[in-house]
Image (tube, rainbow, N blue to C red):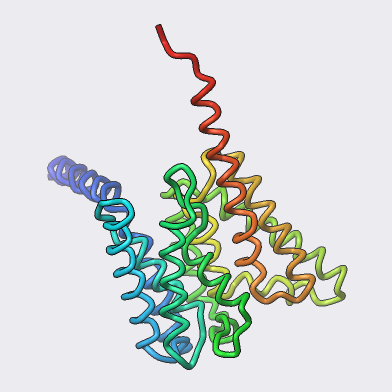
Length: 281
């Protein structure tokens, strides 16, 4: 009986593993939905459900239309969903238009700001950064609307690290976390603030989305492991200086500046290597 049980278990495990491999693109959307649910059920972070719906619908519709018009194709909508829900979580406003505009700008950046057929910016990072940089009185970013419930944070961090490991981007997340901790200590020495005060943003929802979805975004990451580690170190250093100048949204601005330049250089280097490869005889 024991042998029969073990024989039956192997195909089931193999089936689950194969299913996850083929459908992994749906795991990150499910995870970001979990982050939203935890925040909403625990702290009620959403001011209005309609804002979230508008952001998601705008992202999805824009993805469908622009993919057809610009690329002449249909795209999987998982990425658009992540963009929409990220905008819905990260933007705060009493009116609907910022959610619509931010989501639209985010998706448009994928089709307008391109080099060698690839988009350079993480979509939600681009849209949210520009909207926050406008400093309009109608828009703010997510900040104190979510506390640091240890149990909820632990679940999200464990699942997040598992997902980025599966996506082969855990080196990016871990490097950034290490850099943030070191630079938080240095900031505490410079500013005189408590080290834990400088470290505390790392447990918030803004940084969770940033660590697990923005800096690890495969389409906008550079092609080599060493390159990705170098880029995320540069992002952390640029963020360090933004935070010294009391910029609340420092991680978004840092990635928005460093990420596209790194991706552009990476694409140029890849193209140069292809040109230098002698044709086989």
